[in-house]
Image (cartoon, rainbow, N blue to C red; front, side):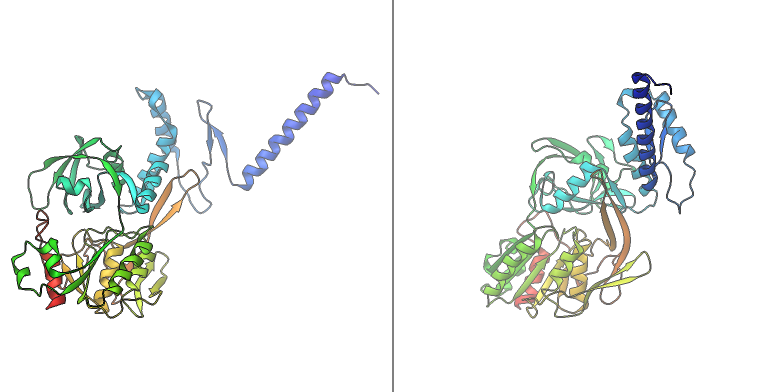
Length: 422
């Protein structure tokens, strides 16, 4: 038998090992239903096969991709990952639903920080209306409010850039920035035909979910400038709880507020203020409503698959019988509308203020492996009486306009106090 030289044996073993290794990779990729191909510039494209249930021709996508890479004047700035994220954003944007969105990793991180209660920016919750970016609510005491931003304002430009066609996330990314820097917004106030430029210095936005007090009428400075306040019983005590959002810390702060209200046994009633509250967690809305409603369904969710899920009262509240008024306005949205609507339908409260925003759809957030997320509208909310909130909002029992420029003449709060103490 002829003996092979050692060097040939070594090469044979090496080639065999590479074949086994390659077969292993192929098997594992097959198990994961992953495909590999090489573009013209030899870069690897991963997972370009659609799911088995989808029939789609992606040739146009890759045609455009290659044309951009071949012909774009500043090819050094091309970032393939950003192009993929942009393509995904365009895909979900084609649905025409402003609440179904894709958030790249940084946007997803910012979104979670917002619900956590701290971030750097101007302090305003944004949404979409008439295909334009709109201010749902400026946060109380934050730079946006101090600069004159109001609920219902359209954001026409950010630092001179036209926002036409922008998503909410794109606008937020442009507006947010380091503390101490300035952003200039071109704003169209509601019922005002001429846009105005407003410069705002960014700051750290710490959002307390809950603020509260228990005071006699004579010490409620927010209504001291309303002349009719003098006709109210000055020693009558009123409890006030303001919910700015339904976030990570809401329940813990809420318990502290309720403890003070319960301790104030002589109070005539409670004002629950959800004006300019953009919403937050659905579970938080059910939990808050359960403070005031003994039993029943707080809200129902009709899902995209045709199923219906009812969310009942989930605990025994401590304020089941206290007289109360809820304050709402055009900045009250989503979870704030769920609470307001449930208390109205169960006749637990009188609603005072202005018609709410009308955001009654359900978004299911799904985190993705790279730190990004997709928020998909998967259902719609129905109030206990079967009404939908979407687009039409909630109309208050008593409509009261207010002058947001006068801190001591809150006519909506004054009306709420009057209803409780008379």
